[in-house]
Amino acid sequence: MANDDPHKSMREAQADDALGAIVWRVPKERIAALGLSADMLAAASAIAGALTFLLFWRGDFWWGLLSAIAFLVISRGAAAMLIPLAWWWAWSRGLGPAGHPLAPVYGIMVLWAAAGGAAVDFGLRRLFERRFGGTRIDGWRNFDRAFAPTAAGPTLNLALLALGLVVGRPEAGLVVVAWWTITTIFVHGVRLAHATELAVRGTRIEPRQ
Image (cartoon, helix red, strand yellow):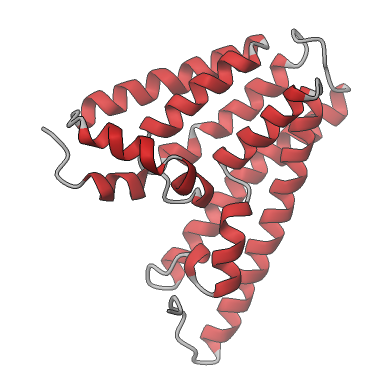
């Protein structure tokens, strides 16, 4: 059955990736206009996500980036945020075959910061939304709207990894992803704490127009 609301699907596909919602808007609308069924899109998304993981794991980073872009254009819902968490693990593993390994202990720390940190950030976003009646952390106030496109997410992380490849330092790209993920967690954690404090004082937490 064709999708009756392509614009809604586009919004759902990058619900937590504000930069992705901007970058992939046009290709997503064109995909939606094709009238493909939800099952077909889900299958294509799963294939692209798995292929990206395999290519990164082998150190075929450029081909993996192309597959990752296909995934982000096709994917919908929480999968667009959760599946890429495994990519950072695969990228870390692929650094060895690509000739740019990180020191073992340092590599584990970077991986936990990038992949584990992204999972924590996803949880913070969902917690904010559930606690405050559906208000999204990236749409609460002007600061949050401004920060959202620069927050760590699949699209921005891939851009950072691609930049690392361009300069011949794929390992440095992953390190930058890890540090920026930690920064994003800190910002979102502070915003959640601030909103919680205001709510306790009786302030209604809702997006400001």
